[in-house]
Image (tube, rainbow, N blue to C red; front, top):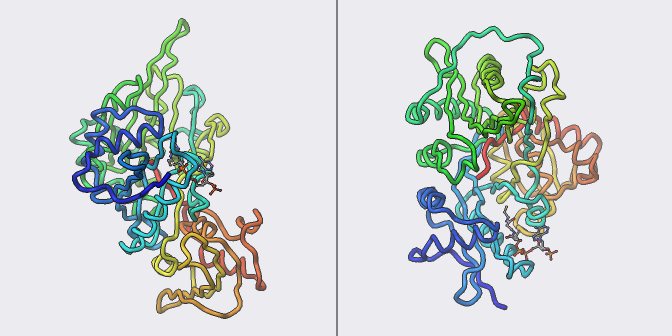
Length: 408
Ligand SMILES: CC(C)(COP(=O)(O)OP(=O)(O)OC[C@H]1O[C@@H](n2cnc3c(N)ncnc32)[C@H](O)[C@@H]1OP(=O)(O)O)[C@@H](O)C(=O)NCCC(=O)NCCS
């Protein structure tokens, strides 16, 4: 079997591509889903895998701008990767990854990011676990705060149109401070965030949009829906928080209180929360949150000197890293990182290494999700100079954990 992976020709029927990728997930491509996908900014970045004339797999890339410590970088947002069941384990994904990463490098994107359906798939291609996310499932009756909240702002339910005017500014204020966020271009807000097609409701009610305001200024927003269920004892309904972004601590406290106080709701769930979520410290019974951590954003360093050179570091210092990268050999080898008052320099070197690491390890520390010390404790990074781990962690340390609130 000869499989060819190539960019989707401009005249190729995109719906067919979408059907193949959805079939790989065992799902049906609804008309409204396709209409949304058609308008998202993938441009010429759809790839297909052909067995003769038959399309048997594919993958796409969104051109994102990703917040990293101290700034942002262009990032290849890998999406919709799938191979139909008849053609698996014959190297199609491997070819697809090769094409995507070569393409990202040519486009000067220093990193690629994705959400993985299974954590075991992408590490072989150099993706490392860059951020965690928490989920909660809590009974409304167990959501009392440790100290009752004094409301300073007001919550207002708003229309989708108003949400489209008010939400993006709140998101952007948080985005620039939180590694792991990506900038949402205009159609993304309308189509991916605010739109409410039936195919995404899964039996639940409509999306509700609400803002938290103080003196007319929007400090937070929340989007949620309710899955209705009743039995003889009353409501068993579940309120699902789709996204809650707060730009201030008071807005976070008050908006979550609002969510927990919606009547006729039995349980509140929220996926993809920040891993260091303040709710754990706000609630009287934190265990009742059922807070569960899992892998979130996976990141691939595509161009090592460009990626490390774009980040900020804590204080001044230098570090020599011996990096193993079999899939992108241009990153493989020994690199010296220097950060001082003149900026950051990353160059090849022959001097003795402080640490031995794999490219996936560098991805894990890049946004601040993990430390070199944690990787060493897991037997991944090896220290080969005195206090090399400490120096590395002092340089790479960040103030906040990375968080990506949305699967793409
Ligand atoms: C995941 C998927 C794309 C893999 O495609 P594929 O063409 O079978 O992958 P390849 O043949 O190139 O596999 C490359 C390597 O990854 C391994 N691998 C592939 N899929 C894997 C999985 N789901 N779990 C663990 N290992 C996997 C293969 O065993 C192979 O290992 P080897 O090099 O040691 O032999 C395909 O199974 C699929 O479409 N799955 C359903 C949809 C999905 O989960 N997509 C990913 C979305 S993030």
